[in-house]
Length: 281
Image (tube, rainbow, N blue to C red; front, side, top):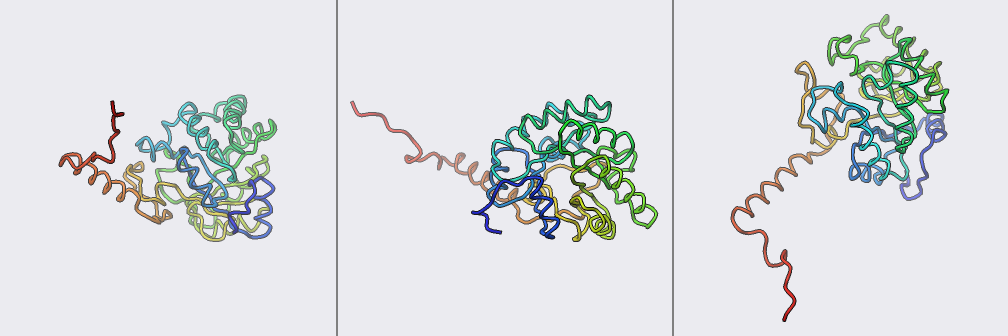
């Protein structure tokens, strides 16, 4: 990919990439500096995820995240991005209660600069919400498999869909989400066989976070990539199997802070070159 010749990623770009079997690069970002770096690095899609609750605010899960918490972070990310396709993650109870709530809250993400929104689940209630948002003119990404907003029903952060019957059910949910008008679906923590089956049989893009190598693109969480995640997941489960650490920024930051603290305590900082000089009389 020639990053210098990039154009703004659109829904047409994503569909074309699926047709050409070009995997998309998908990452979360939650603030202006991170989004700047992701965009310069050539990332195709950015999710301002409700995972912000765990990565940035120290919650055990995503359920405490609200629209009012999400929107300032979405605005910061969208101000940074020139090329990537930005998706806003609709938090718990921002769309489940009614079609009106779903449309109103989706519009807040779009006004903040997102190209699309994402919501979890494939049941009748959720597909009705997806249809209402799509009918209002909003691009909606579905999210199936492990859906963190339904932790209690799923029994925690555990992989489901390990046999043919459960995968058949997942396929039916994906069909319902597609038929409701979703432009793409994210599959989380499902066996590669499920990811391949759905990606191969659907015309819309199918992305994965722990869904194997045969989907149309891969999502990872920023803090997992960078080695900066300090929290924990619910029910005592730690970093998921699908997460890959590409560096350890957290260790580098801590090392720098220790050096700074040492220099302050030993009167080595600031030195003359860090001080302003008075004008001569």
